[in-house]
Amino acid sequence: MPWPGTTELVGRHVALLPLSHEHHDELADATRDGELWKLWYTVVPSPEEMRSEIERRLGLLAAGSMVPFTVRADGRAIGMTTFMNIDATNRRVEIGSTWYAKRFQRTAINTEAKRLLLAWAFETLDCVAVEFRTSSFNHASRKAIERLGARQDGILRSHGRHRDGSVRDTVVYSILATEWPAVRTHLDFQLRRER
Image (cartoon, rainbow, N blue to C red):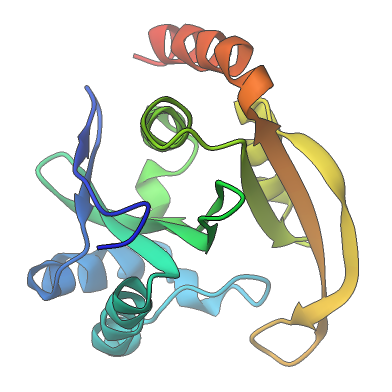
């Protein structure tokens, strides 16, 4: 498999496992928690769309443009996350297409999941930068990204479309390899406080 390959990442609160069709039923249940597919400014599969979303992400894995993970906590699948927009030549990835069941949002789950992904990116894959992108209207996601220690690079105006067809401005953030040691210390500090 081409760079970056795939792996399993395990922390105290969360495990990131390579996405599999075996996770379908638990992921469909997780998306029901908060009816996340109804949010107009983000793309989260409905329970009925989960099988095709898993298939789509696995197809992108086979094409080398995504590394999809199932996020597990409390002994079950609670969401998804990915490495996407993979640029092997320039050693850059984007962490995105992330969602969690509502009851796990704003918990140590996201902090630790991002800590695990960032450590793999910078310490194993030797990335020069990791990006995060979100809709300008997704204020919860923007706050979560900023809380990680990522810095805003800019806004791509009229960059795409939301699920409802409205124009999307995309806010781009990144963490550079040179910033990773301080960000790692910051995330470890947050995790100690979020137990």
